[in-house]
Image (tube, rainbow, N blue to C red; front, side, top):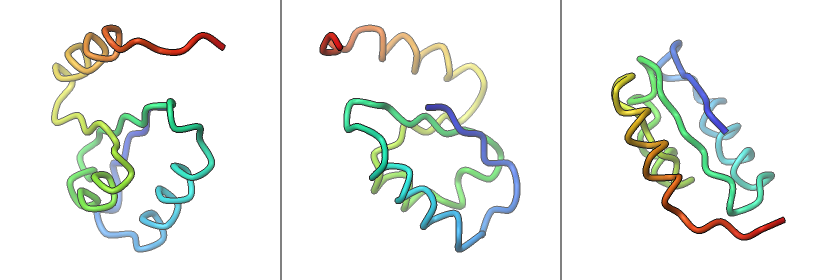
Length: 74
């Protein structure tokens, strides 16, 4: 699941929504987050073990890393 957080950088409700999203998704589903306001949610993003993109170029690295992970067959 990829999310882009662009505005605002301090929405208190978004923290709770991100925690809820993690609980609703199976553990093998990776959450990738980018966007100019993502840094404002760093603590909750670490807690939900999201992969945080710092720029567009880091998306390719992130996807390359994910392609190397052994995923169980469904």
